[in-house]
Length: 386
Image 1 (cartoon, rainbow, N blue to C red):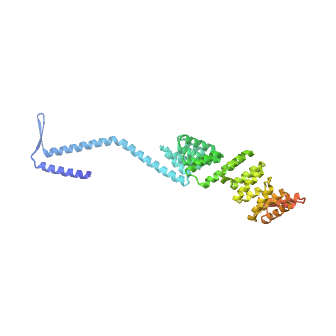
Image 2 (cartoon, rainbow, N blue to C red):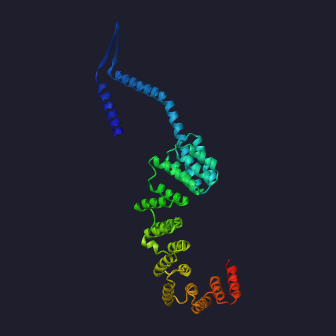
């Protein structure tokens, strides 16, 4: 459109000049006693020439005045392009695992005056991968204390070095700066609490992640199980342990690992009857040879009831050596010598074990016979297993 306008203007000027050339018009300039006469066409040409020269002079002056700024912008753009190339180089090297090259590229960009926080972060991560922790901390120190990337990176580094308290301190600084509630920070907090064995806090963070659908259900279940196992281990008196177990969700009380941990804790506190009940409840839901082995160690006041229950299970699991061993131990405890020997022999017949031979040796010793052969066989199996 602009070019069309100038074309039209040129045509108009040409027409005007043509008309003026056929017109006997002139321009008279008087200055004092001096008189200058021009033809109209010459006068117009002089005006146009003066305008073009004046315009060119003004443009030249403006360009000359703007030249330093242009040079400065040109140099800045060239430097910026160079720094961007270094950023690409640093990122490419880092993700390819060339950490020394990544650190050098990022450090060079910082030397050129690049102030973006990305460069010290790349350099710090590369230095950490190279286990150059002093250099890593130096790079991180160039970022502001409340910088999200700095605190996130610090937390990650501390967790990799198994320093959960330092990681939690970094996350606390991040939270105070208003950046500790996003998913990535919560995941780091969860891992830190796990490492530090702060199970109550870990469960609180887990609930926050679950509300955001940011954790898989299987992972959440396993973490809760780990937390509950640690909780059981912290209970050192019977009332506290009973209360803790009672307050656990029902689905977890039936899990084999938790039932085994609770049973062992109860056995250590002399609560054999309650341990047997917990094991029986879990075994009814999920059969587990480890649990049935613990069941045989429960010398409760209801031992005959235990035997009856185990014999019912035997109808379904007749080839389970651990169940037969448990029945042999329970019958030995009740001084049912004949049944005890039958069950122990049957257990050894299915799967010889050091525990079964040891139980048979103890039974033989109570009957007044020599248990040496059985103990010797138990020792051989133990040695072979180790």
